[in-house]
Each structure stands twice: as structure tokens, then as C-alpha cells.
Length: 338
Image (cartoon, rainbow, N blue to C red; front, side, top):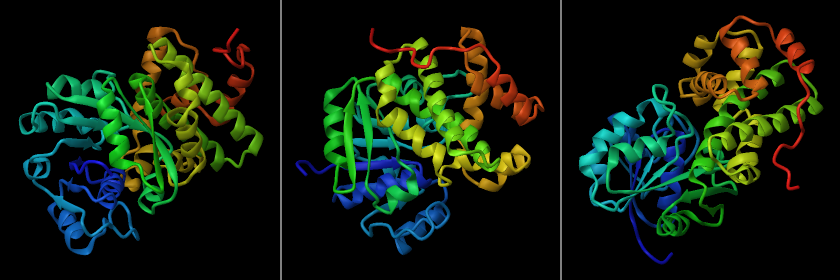
């Protein structure tokens, strides 16, 4: 480690806690902002976050606070790890508390419901003179907090931010790669949540491995088709933020969105499933936005349309699958080098 940083993680859910734990492991001064004072006290006295990461022992040097001003005071790096629906509200609270030039990293994999904007865009509008990056990859919070080996991508237009976050987080169990396609990295993280719901639903129905493989591959094609139309680099989707994150969220029951899909596949009601989960499954919100945008932009997205039909239009799984299998045949790889 070359420099010691003062770091705040805004958002005391599973992923925010996992990132804070890494920063603490690296020996930096780190504070985790949590809305709930009792949970903050639990982190400080028992070194755990039982509500979000049960059974995981946290670094004793990790400090938590329910006071946002206290948490970010004097920080040169701030990670924002709140649900997409809370991002703008929290950013407005943050704005007067940050010093000019503070490095901001968004880890939220979602879109703002009212505007269809990604979190880096929301933060840019609200925070003023700060440097912004986004982080995404196959980073299931429980495994990350348990210090199991994985990697991620940090993307920013500011190379100094990218280098700083690599130095801040890279360790024996967490490899941090650099990227410049901010929009592509962030969009990949938001879109894959929808397809994790599809994969969970398919798993609950007991489909074969061939089917799951096809679903994941066509999900990658569909999300990259949308992203390229919106200005992202298709090659971004071949990396950790794209196929890496898509694969893990479409195959692991640790993924919240996968669990939503699995319960839907068992015939349960969406609202009941989301309420029982107790944590935000961003894919539910993103599905609505993606359905609207795909129609506005005339983008072929059969998996999105199919899942939307099942959840919101009362269609059966067999009806949707039948319609997809007999739909117009498209190219397998749309962005091949010619």
C-alpha cells in the first residue's frame, strides 16, 4: 500500500459492508454509514452485520456511524452503495458534506425509476465538483465478505481515480481491473439483474443445463444489443462487468434477483417474494424501465418481453417460451469482427 486513505462507505447493506471490510483489511481509516443506529452499534461492538451478512466476522477496525456528516468527514474517497431508489436523496444529503475533488465510486447496479438514469449520472447531477467512478463485477457480497477470491472492474474518465481505487482495494482475495467504458460497465451491472430473475425462474422449473446455458448466452446478446444502442462498447460485455457478473447472478442462489425468479417459478406472488427477501432486488425495477426503453428504441429483447409478460401481464411460462422459440431467428453474434 502506497498511500493511506480516509474512506466512507455510504450504505450499510451487504455489499457496502463487504467493501468496507476490504478497506479495513487494507489498513485504511474507514467508516460505514448505516441508517439504523442499532445496526451501527452492532458493527462497532460485535464486529458483525447480522441483518445482511450473518455469520461473517468483520475487521475490528471497521467503524460504523448513523451520522452521515460524521461518516464522510475528511474523507478523500466515498463509496455510494445505497439502493437506486435512494441514490438521489442520499446524494443531496452528501453534497454539502464533501470537499471539492472527493473521489466518488458508485457500486449500485440499478437505474433510477423516474428518469431511467444510471447512478453515476444521478451522482454527477447532485454532487458537483467531484470525480466519479463505477465498480462492477462478479461480486456476491457474502462471498466477498468471506474473503473468497474474485475480481471487479473500476471504470472512470479520471485515471487517477482508477489507480487510487486499485491501490485501495486490491489484495490477496480481490483483484481490481481498470476500465474506461463507464457507461458500459455500469449498464452491464444494471441489466444483468433482469436476466438473473429469468435464470432463477428457469431453475425453479427444473430445466436442463443446455437451457440455462442458452438463456445466459442469449441474455448476454440481448443486454449488449441494448447497451450498444445506448452508446456502450460491446467488448465491455465480454469482461468481468459483463459475462462475469451475468454468469454468477444467473447461477447462484446468493443472488437476490435469482432468488426472486426462483420463487416466482414456484408460483409465488412477486410482492410477497420481494417483501420476504428483505433486501432490494434491483432487477424488478430495471425490468419495467428496460421494457419501456426497448419499445421506445425498437430493440429486439424477447427475454425482457417474456419476463414482463409473466410478472405483469399474467402470461404463463409455457406461452412465453413457445412464443420465443418460434419467434424470428436472429444472428447469434451481432458484433463479430468482420
